[in-house]
Length: 202
Image (cartoon, rainbow, N blue to C red):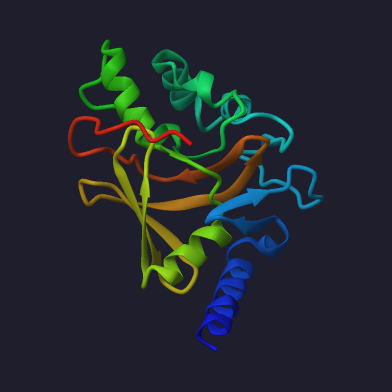
C-alpha cells in the first residue's frame, strides 16, 4: 500500500513538472534509463534544439546558455568523459550563474569544481522524485569529484538542489536527454566545500 502511494505521488509530481515525463524514463538499479529513441521531444535551451542522439558535451556546446560551462569542461578535461560511453547527469548552471572560485589558471582546481556538477548515472526528474520519496524527503548524490549534492522538494513538484556549502539552486529546465545521460539546467552555481574526495566513476 505504501509503495503504491509512493508510486502515485511520483507519477503525479512528474507529470506536473514535465507534462509527460512518465514516458521518458524507467528505473533500473536506481539508475534511470532514458530512451534516446523516445518520441517525447527534448526541451530547448534558449531556443536551441537539444538532440537526444547527441552526447552531453555536444548538447552543452550548442546551448546559448552554457558557453562558460562548455569552455570549462573542455579546459578541465571532463568534457572528454561527457563525449564517451559513460552514463552521467550534469547539473548545468547557466552563464549568468557560472563561477569557479579559486580555479583560474589551475586545471586541477577547475576539474574539482566542474566535476562537482557531474553525477555518474542517468537521473531524470522522475527518478529524482522517486529517490526523494524513498529517502524520506531528500536524496544525496555522489558527484564525479567525490563530493555530495543533495536534492529535496521545494513545494509539491519543484526539485531543489543544495551544495555542500548549503547554497541552493532550482532546476530551471528538466530532463534534457542525451545519448549518454541527461542535463538538468540550474539557476545558481553549485560548489564543493573542500578538496576532492575520491573520484566516483561507474
